[in-house]
Image 1 (cartoon, rainbow, N blue to C red):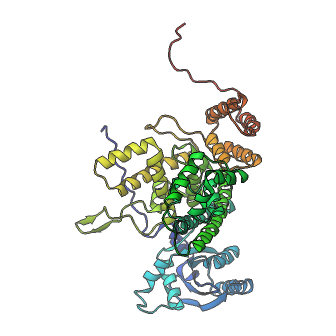
Image 2 (image 1 turned 180 degrees about the vertical axis):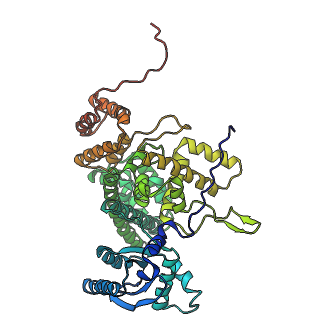
Image 3 (image 1 turned 60 degrees about the vertical axis):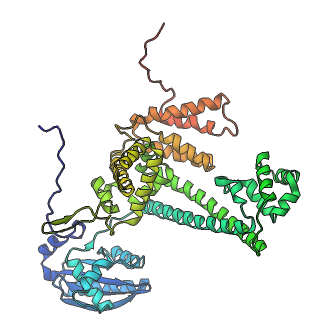
Amino acid sequence: MSATRSRRRPRARDVVQKPSGTFHPRVQKVGPEHFGIVSVDCAKARSKWMLCDFFGNVLVAPIEVEHNRTALDQAIAQLRQASALHQLHDLLVAIERTGRYHRVVQRAFAAAGFETRIVHPFATKQFRQPADPGNKTDDTDLAAIHRAAVSGFALIEATLDETWKTLQLLIRHRRDLVVKTTILSCQIREHLDAAFPGFAACFGKLLWDSASAWHLVRHFASAQELLKAGADGLSRSLRDAHIRYQQRTLVTVLDWAAQAASADLAAAQHHRIALDLADDRQRKTLEIQALERAIAARLVATPYVLLLSFPGVNVVSAADFAGEMGPIAHYANSRAITGRAGLRPARSQSDRVDHADGPLVQRCNRKLRAVIMGIADNLTKCNRHFNVLLHHWKAAGKDPRHTRVKVGQRFCRIAYQMVAGRQVFRHPGLQGRHYILDKLSAFHRAHDTAIPALLRDLEAAIDQLPRSEYQAEARPLHEELDKIKAGGRRGPQLLGDILPIVLARLGADKVQSTESGDKDPH
């Protein structure tokens, strides 16, 4: 036998239609003239629908239906009547995806017991243009939707329950707030530099987390006022506000104020706008923290919490991946993940010409791809194994985009084995793993989570852990508890109240240390 493992060849397709769009065995069973297809073209306030048999004979001409309960119930009753009149023994409803407006019609027909399928607008366009070039109307779109459904482009959507849908909405809302906070930060820096030229450089990356910096900006209108107050005045103002500071910070600020450039002509207005935007940014930051606590509570109820044992993956990254992925049962293997995310090159082949190394495909789930690429960036920075690979590929002259995609593909393969197999991180290139409960408790401490919520999340995470990992997960918790008992930690000791509860739940009152293998010198 060859020592090298042969590459698995892709299995040939059984049918030319997409697997989730095939319904032709049902047509054969009842007969094409007894199989109905309802085409629905959706808009914001109303939709238009039409009923044809499989051959395309119009049984119910295009009819408008308003998006309210009475009109939808009337449309469903009319569909049932037409189905009985034309002796349709089976049918499906093909709805063109239109933002979120199609969801109203989809829920109504699904609740009435009809199978609903989704047609992508691209498919509608491609099936309309050959038949009606330069003529786009609701009626021509309905005909195109019917032709797309017959050709296998009316696809079955994987449904999400309330738990997964809520997690998806939370992570997307958080990402939206992060983008808005980033925009606010840029605007604040612009106005702050107009009123206090060069002040932000005194604090560097700590500007946004420095309470002393924003106290000085809020209570002093210009560099001249800061210089006039002097070190004693600035110290007194910070002490009165109970804000901790370092004397060298005040020296840096005063040195800047002594040689600060002149402010903008409308410095007072820039100052006021910067403070208003800073307040808005602070509110959004608190909202993001609250969302992250809620996201963590949703994550621990899913097997994706096992990804926390992956070095370089944190709570937010794992939750983003879980929210965009949905249940792992929707994926047959890791290639289904990378295929949905479009982590593969576009291919153009004709006769003897084959360009198989094109750019990444454009038609994919962009949100899932963005999450995977973000995790790939984190792994190349925070995971030693992938960081070494990064430098190795860079030395080999690989394109940085190639590196990101390769790391993303490898992450998907490992993540699929972990989540689908309900196991913690295992990798031959890495020694050891991160501990899920330890990383989760650190996350909640950084977010000032209430103790009952922290305990609830830890207990939910234990339910997702393999029982064989209980002892390993208990080890860092025991060490943390020993530090608390020894008085090695300052500040509130409330964590010491819940660690015994978690350890008892793990059934690990005592953790045996592993033997080093060295002989006893005595």
